[in-house]
Length: 104
Image 1 (spheres, rainbow, N blue to C red):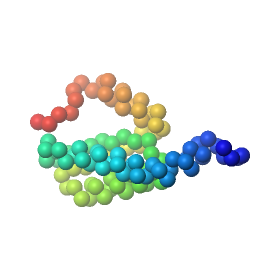
Image 2: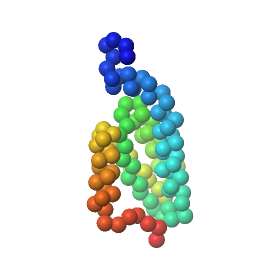
Image 3: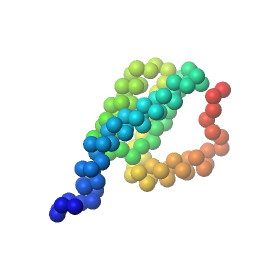
Image 4: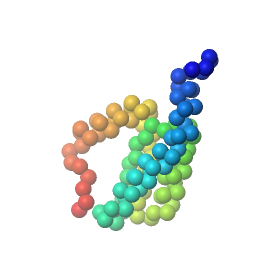
């Protein structure tokens, strides 16, 4: 590591350029799930994430583009804090949700 560069700065320099394609695949996978036969009615997807900075702006742009193009589906992207806080919230949600979503 170069003198004067923090660990978070070094990680950001290494990961940021490669994360945008990964982010696109993540959003594409979420959008593909909306195209399932059970998603024909009005569908809302709460999408929790830990993105900040440029990645957050890119995610918000992708979500806005999708929401404009799909009148019967809506993604609500919510920043839940750090990666650890986001994972903790997801685990808590899974453990405390009485039933799982299903197609009816």
